[in-house]
Amino acid sequence: MATQTNTTRRALVSSLAALPVAAAAPVLAGEHPDAELLRLGDALKRAVAMVDAFPSEEAHGTFYATIRAIRDRGESLDNNLDELQAGCAQVDRENELRQAAHHIQDAIHKIAPRTVDGLKVHAEALAWAFSDAWDEPLDAVDWPDGCVRRFVEAARALPGPSV
Image 1 (cartoon, rainbow, N blue to C red):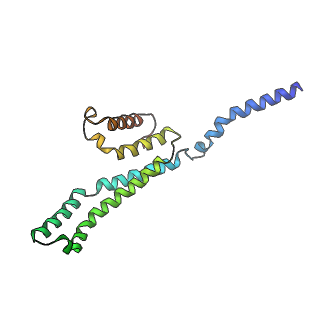
Image 2 (image 1 turned 180 degrees about the vertical axis):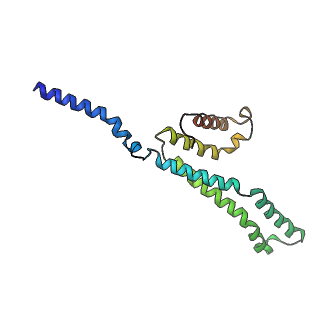
Image 3 (image 1 turned 90 degrees about the vertical axis):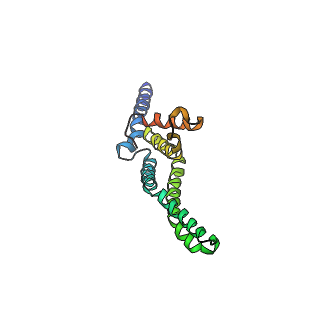
């Protein structure tokens, strides 16, 4: 009977000792616990790069130049919808790019991070959503933007690869 109790204890201790290894098994097998967040983080990075590369000022300038040209001719905007629509095409494209990035950002925030890497993905999504928080010195931004900025910068400073 005492042998059985010792065996049971030994088995229990062995099982408990193996738990961290079993929990880390997906990482060891190449599957990161935040694999989906990391994938979405990469997708957001690509989407934001497309938004940043888009000639926004040029697109908006073209659209407003179209409106001015119609008005300079003394014509109604309502009577020149085809011309306006052509001017809107670039602005619409920018909006589509931004909307795609926002969908990815929303997907990121619906997944709880499990690791520092996942937390960094969340921080980068927040940084994009609150990008205006970096337009001024930290002491000049309003309180909520300052809080987000401090959090993002603290997350970026955590050990591990940047995402």
